[in-house]
Length: 402
Length: 139
Image 1 (tube, each protein chain N blue to C red):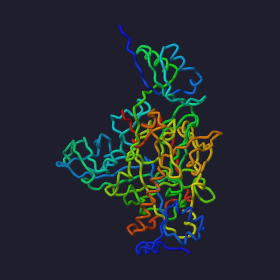
Image 2: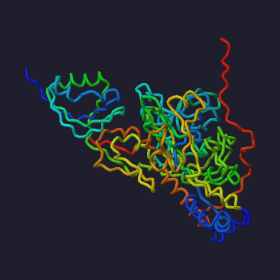
Image 3: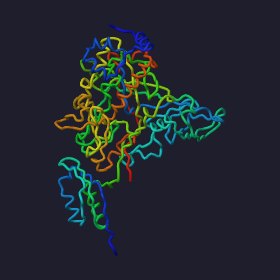
Image 4: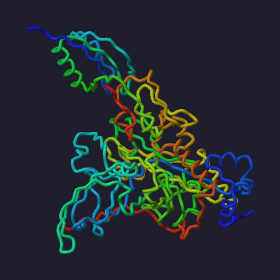
């Protein structure tokens, strides 16, 4: 029997809602079947906690006296450059930005111990951050430089705005070369010495809504410990990839652009991170509730690690050279077991996305919904689906004539 | 002139091309160093690791480290202690792949990262590999 979203929200308000995590849904559906699960369960909660480079913070710093206009100048927070090409005191700080003084990979592999993601963590933790800006003067904005300590509380609007989070499935990274590879997928030991993966698998939001039936523009979510929203499809949203019979993408597919008020968030769910030899980033906590409107949604949220296939890609050659070579596919159940068999070799697996924390997010969201403080939303607009002919295109190779 | 005697605990990282060579024998015979192997994990065709204490004159020790570098063995001072800061750790697991002695493991089915200090040889590989700075060196 199908339910409406309004019926589910009414149950949330009256305290009668039945909520389970996506992990609990696997077992429940294997006992009761999708039909039985759809009748019993109203909401399935998901979660993921992993490094998401396409993240950052939009902030308004308030006006100085006399006024200053950052646009056209340079702005730094704890020495990390932020983008000032907006109105006078609006800036965007990206998670992967690095101080000019950072030696990068000049001494290889670089450490990247402090970047944009770390500034975001410092802000969210309530620590003061040093703003330094230089710019040109105008009649209306005469001031040319400023240096001041700031805290998150003192800023005006400050919202996390992540153009690409919550990847629906992802590569498993291996290294077939003879030297260690330092990548955004972590340290990859040579000669298939490790297989690194980065997805919460059966708990991951978009893997539980493979055709974006309930997750869309406007969906209310758990973001960084606070309440946020899906703003749009994420960059590189690529829904038309090959899928299993159940409709689960066999490689990175859908993505989400999300936003939320940084002042509600917590450093437990937003962590600055450093990938040796690669760069700085932000580990983001994201959770999305899925209303179980019918049997089809119940079946989709019952997806288990055995059902989800991830492509194994060589990050010493195929990935950097943008060759679309997949060595093979492995399941998240295999990855989570600790080893996978690749080319006749038993390869230890290394997770980069925290499963225990993903579970904690799904459980937190379950508590929020069960206690009546978090109602579900219908999408304002659907995300492009597998039939939308949307595809992530490569960069054109068309250099100017010399 | 008196010769200064030194004794250093170091971690030697062997590339696979060197694992077939009698490196420790050479250190003893050609450089006159006394050695005490504290832990070793060396397999043919794999990167090997050895925790070793080397003692001898300062000059011999310097010559010996030159020899090791020349044949591609990476030398790392053995640190005193490695700690896992549980307030920083997010239980991702990025460290387990680089830990040569499985002192860092993912516990199943909880998928939490467990650090067993008794199995740790203090090579320090986990420290720069931890994305959130949870593995700390204590000197």
